Figure: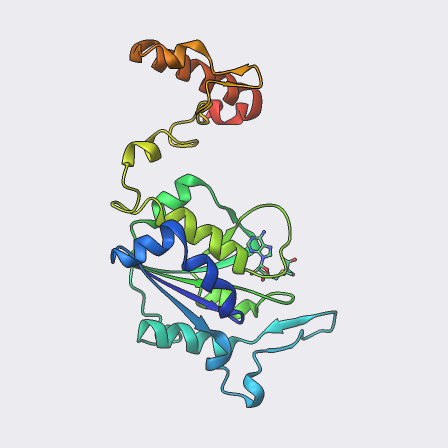
Length: 233
Ligand code: SAM
């Protein structure tokens, strides 16, 4: 998979993409992540990419020329007015007005060979970009960030870790929260006794059937208490 991130703050991504699972996935050649500076596609003096909102009001808006030019140059063909589309590629814009990101949505995105992620800033982006360029709009929650970059990082992290071969023990992914309609069960590790707080006996019993039963019961209890909505699905 290839992921292209378009942003006016490319440096924000360096530490995130250069560590841990995302770094290893790139080193293994399982994903290629390119970060593009939107200002390089401005075509205006001082690499300006924003302008005031027509009709007045506070804040600036990202102009369409730079964004269209960036995406078309990344993909290598014109998208509007040519309307050429490739179903193996998707152009994603992060906005609080988008559909809320879920694990199901992340899994669906795995079918794409290439994802172009657009990070908004200021008051947002010119609506023509959203209407004629973007394929899907994604929100990471009902709150407003100052830019789409943290949302893009969340999206990249969540998708990269489920690319086959990235996480060495695929069982750990299968058992995670949201994989079924349950939250993950509680985990314990050494020491067995920490300040008189003891690990549940069953987990030390070596009886795998009993351990499975205990974990299922706890996963159900947690889901009922915290996310009963998942059980209705
Ligand atoms: N005026 C916009 C609105 O009310 O919908 C908010 C603009 S916000 C200050 C700037 C940028 O941050 C947005 O264009 C978007 O890219 C990003 N952003 C903010 N909140 C987000 C969220 N919950 N999910 C995804 N992206 C978000």
